[in-house]
Image (cartoon, rainbow over all chains, first blue to last red; front, top):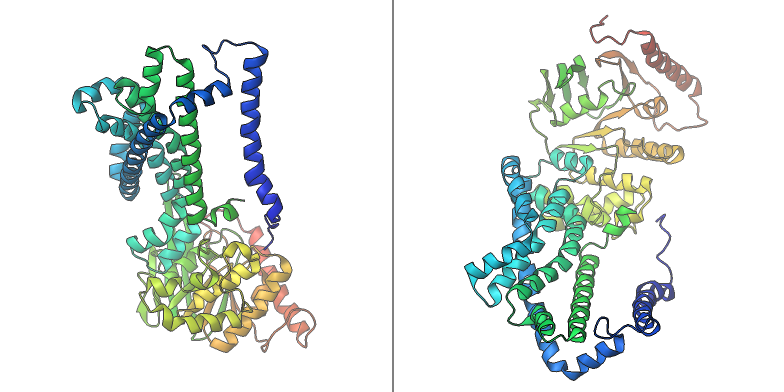
Length: 262
Length: 261
């Protein structure tokens, strides 16, 4: 009630539509200008026009490879999120388990995943599985940490309230703790989204078969820098789309979060 | 309705133990409005939480309706200093939270929720979210939530202390009306003499550290009482002055927890 309304429709379009587009356009313009002004050899840094031309040479192939990477990212991400939520709930429910498991999880997270890639190759061979496993390994940790932080941050007054109502553990968990944790869980999801893409690319670079990671490996073999740039741009686009997808789901599920954090 | 019998509470912490409440005995009648008043840290809230069954007394017993309290009861409702509303639930859904937790049928209690909203002047706010309401309105919602279960006893822990002065007075007068209408037994913790005098049948003045009942003061002023001009100003001034001196004289007692009368 005391909040100032979020502004008219026009100003929302401005902040949510025009400004982000403008940011992207300026970035591309600076990139272009830099390649023109400093006469950079396209072999080192191609201009945006070169990149677009390259994409248009083989759009079908690139879209197909992108789709393969996206599938690996999505499958891995879903597995990572589901697993992390289960693990986080278990850890938040039992202090004993938390104390035992946390150092192990932190240690697993600290291992450079690139170093694991050759091992995954030995264990799981080629194909989709090692890539998906890599996605899971790279992206699980932020979700666990943020979910646990959320589950243990229930305010004292709400805890007292449900205690005074003699709510069961399950009622407390579902009706209060989990809901209260959602905004923080989404922080973790937003951190994990780009990590999932990085994981897929690591997997594909180490054992190239398909996907944009493999395209990058192939382009360096044929000294096709522009093609590598095309792959990078496509990865960036995938990253942005997935990030805003998660943010969109967040706005649907926790529209109240903004109001209480301000 | 409530019998507090020789209740003490000592908290054991890392830096030794703190005696919060020592040997408090009180008898609170059916439909009585008892205000517990005392300075910060005198164990007022501790006493309330023991009546609620949220905290086990180190010594003595608390009984409600003839049964010893060991765990929270459904006929005892609490109102906290903060409204403690779930931010994702509408006003109505917040009020129906106890109904859900008790496993009662929501549809049966909707009319009652509607009636309570009307009673507290919140008609039309049923579908709003808590953050869209002012502090005073939020506290009204939490009052409705406490009343939905038709409690025999309502325990209120400084419920208006986070509000601005005018809203406090407004809500205090409203609470008086609700008490007169429903006849619920109410234990109301506050540090405001004004609130105590407006609301209470009796005021229990607690001394600080450890909390003990220093005096039980009767307020024989007829209801409905009002702030500002009324026919009983002399009486109000008299009782207020008495409570004032009881609370302030606490200052001159040594802070030592061993001190007793």
